[in-house]
Image (cartoon, rainbow, N blue to C red; front, side):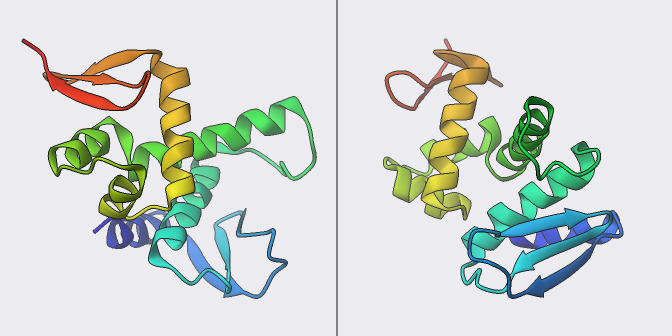
Length: 152
């Protein structure tokens, strides 16, 4: 479902998607309203992760951020945070927990993202929220590991 939602969001924002053969280290680029994804991306999960981040660049990035620098690193993090929230978010963590996903692999599969993306999202949320936070009437704990409980 997230895959179709991403494609719809790209369309609504008048983004043009292209697939090209690029260096294996380059997975995606956003140039103006053009998003270029590497042709080597062969899984829906990786496609989702890369496309969500590139949409995040479209919505949050200003200028060329390909060179090293603190401001560019901040913009890169904003685009990734957009992707984490779009594909996972606290809602996704709670849904995966409620679906009895007890491992990173199971949760990533359930949310249709890569394991590396899921792990990075957890690290991001730990940094953003600390030990725990609430989502609706649920307590989401990040340290020492992910746990979701009813508040009450």
